[in-house]
Length: 309
View 1 (cartoon, rainbow, N blue to C red):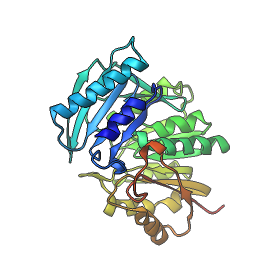
View 2: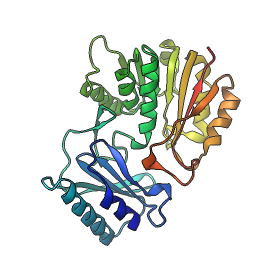
View 3: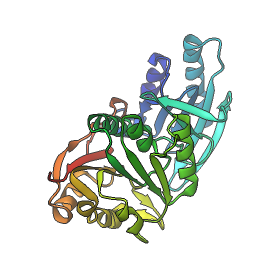
């Protein structure tokens, strides 16, 4: 695990939430199971395979030594999580986790929860997508945004901060949307009249409410790749893509996100050609350098499409 230890030894003091080491990108042989993230002031060490106590002690010692250099007056706050298919085990290795735990990214603040479940409230690999939404909304003030599979509504926060007129956030989980509301409050976006709405809804049951609020200038599709009983990309993504042309305003844009190494770029490109050929492919949003992968097909895919004017 020398590559991970070297990354720890040379890391700077993290101020924003960010990935420190990305073994999952398979660029460091022998370290594929490891990921290290900073959710200041807490570090999150994740292993996707069982890890020995000796390995954990070695990584813990390396982090402790580096932390003494970076912040000698502060304790090391470290959470460890082992993740396997559909389950996780999480424990606090040292220090503590603040409650509430607020982190920053690109001048926005979000609430995260590292000791609960596999999803922590902010997907760090989507930083490039959030930056694209911010820049897009800045260049088109007043746009109407539809944020599907909104989770904790980070896209909504950056869009409204950048000047979007309104955002409709849709997710099956009312709990995730409640955190989304708090994220808007944290960033001072809960004023009157409210520009963000939150709809706890299964879109496959009915599109009526969503359609009536359209058409939209920007639609964000960021579904889970596989969530049993909710969404399976291989069969359900097509059901979303068929709806895009009728939901988009003339000249509107769609952001399509796919985060699974099992489906490559062609999965989305081919389906769009078949199901929404009237939308033009604009390009792919670059992933953060910290998430570099040996294969662009394995990494997060974020594609932009545009409707005719």
